Image (cartoon, rainbow, N blue to C red; front, side, top):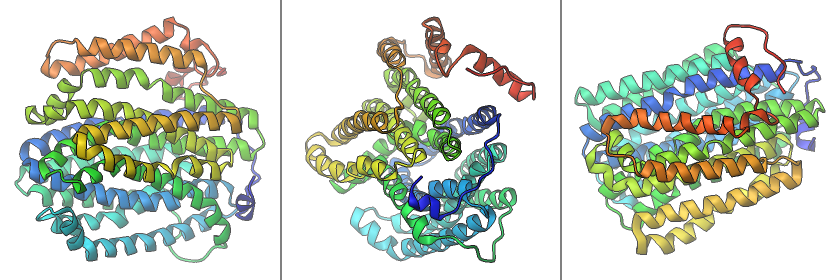
Length: 503
């Protein structure tokens, strides 16, 4: 364990024997809750793109993106470090409350900063009317960032079901409020007010579930906390910036609001796997770190290997979506956004690569290799700036997407090799080959699907189930970590039955 981690104090409570079952239970509930996100996001995006003009949707996308990036900065600074601190601290409530108050103070500073700089940002991007949307969106920053940190506390304490319930409420309420505001004719500003109210409700639920003291003091070694948090902050903020820097570069290098809206729509849909993976990474970080702290390195490596392996099984699904990009875009956004289909196909493949990078970074943190994750990922942003500046003037939106794709998968290769070299954790070669072969076949099969409109909602799941059956036939679910018995035990977990021993 690093000196920073030691300085924060550790809890010597033994690791429960059913920690694997507890993680599987928590993972299941979080998956069920966060599965609402793509559904509600698709419904919301479909309404927005049909009710708002491309210029209005472009302004909304820019303001939401900038506020979301600000929230990501705050979460990167306090969020994942909070998981490790709460896991290790003897006085977890006091430590969590102290860090939460510091985070809230930082969020208020960012809120004021956005209020004051809204006109300047609108002038730089040359988007009329953007300043007002930015000021409204600024109100979400303290609510959203604080609620996300409280979710990390729930994860660190193993209260996965409360975390899942809060997430489910957030996605459903967000969809209802935003759609209602737009349908009633309040436009972009009404949609933003709906987002702010949703984050305020989410914060209230987080305070109720965590029950941490809002006042008082706790002995938190801030020098040690900073040493622990800074590499994680640099890594997370680099990833969050890299996710969106292509949109910002496209806007600043001459694209108009309509072009930005097309690219932003494709990007928002493509990044869904990345956003969904964040909650799973928090669960994995907490559980693997708990095993490592307890001295069970073998168990930690096994759980880490299962996490890395699961992320690779996303390849076939991403390939199916990329192959049917025109149908998916048309169904979600409408016919006028079909021009974004080639960009979307590239970005969905890049997004799955970003999931692999995020998994490698989280697992390096769990094994206390914090500095290495920063070394691997921080260079992505300056590299992206340079390459985007060269590619976008010549290739436009496709240049931005190709740059994101190339840099992402280069980082996947380097980070995967580094993870294996430092921890011995890797994805089985057989799993990788099966996923790649299925991905290539699924992509070409999806490309030749007949135009089907809403039937794509049945075709894609059917192809995904077919891919899963092929994986079972090939033996993927009979090798180490993922077994048929572990899948069948999910039903037992739901109904509180004692599961079989997981291999």
